[in-house]
Structures are given as structure tokens and as C-alpha cells.
Length: 155
Image 1 (cartoon, rainbow, N blue to C red):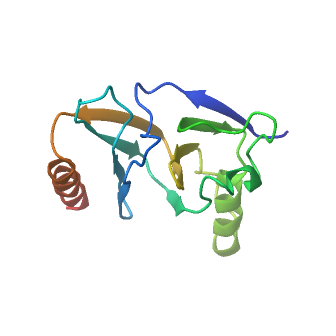
Image 2: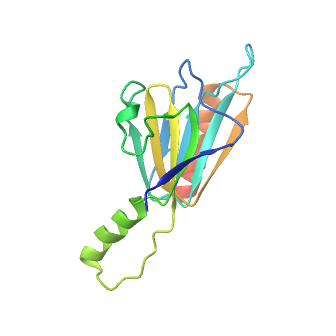
Image 3: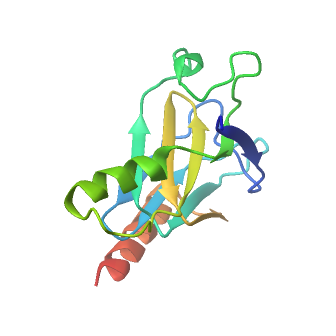
């Protein structure tokens, strides 16, 4: 079955003029701080938290190369925003890698495949769920809060 990419409405999308993504991830947590698209003059910063995080890919392809991504529909393309890949092969790849060392292990890779299309970056995360919070604080304040949460989660 071919994977299907569906739009997620999480209330915000990354700013088309540049969202300045900052990724904070370790073996237990994954958070992405970014500038969302807002009405003119409304300073806001968003933080996406990926619960039950397993793996992340961040960076390329940029906007121009996005149509070359194997999941991108050339007819429709992707706008800036959040997506979910239903029927993704990604959890199966992790399961196959795990079976090399643990051939009798039962499948534990049930995470969902999320995409976040940003200006000049693509973020792909394998996680149980994603939530987004929007703050009326500076980017630095939200980033420091994300770091504090990461440190708390790591204890």
C-alpha cells in the first residue's frame, strides 16, 4: 500500500518568510521551536512537542528540491504546515534494523510519521503524537523554556 500524506490542522503553520527552526532532541524527547505565520505585528513563537519520539530527520530538502522528496505528490506539492504520513514504511525500517540483533522481538514501532514543511527546511519525526503551543514571548525565551523542558525530561 502506498503511503498517503494528509494535512494536519494544529492551529499554526511555519512562517513562509522564514520560521527559524530550532530543533532540540535527545533519546527521550523532541521539540521544535519556530516562528509561525501570524497577522502582521503579532509577535509569536510556537513550540511543537513530539511525544513518544523515536527518530528525527531535519534539514534538506529545501523549497526548490521538495518536489523530489519520495512522498511529495508532484501534482499537488506541499504547502508550509504539518502533515502525517499514513502507511509510512519508516516504522517498518526501524523494526527490520532491530531484528538484526533481536530476531525474535515483537514489533514495538507503532509511532506515526509527521512532516513539518518550513521555509527552506523539512522536519520529519517518528513519534506517538504532536502538539503545538503558541507563545507571546521572544524566540529566545521559548527556546530556553524548550531546553529546560528537555533537561527535565532527561532526568
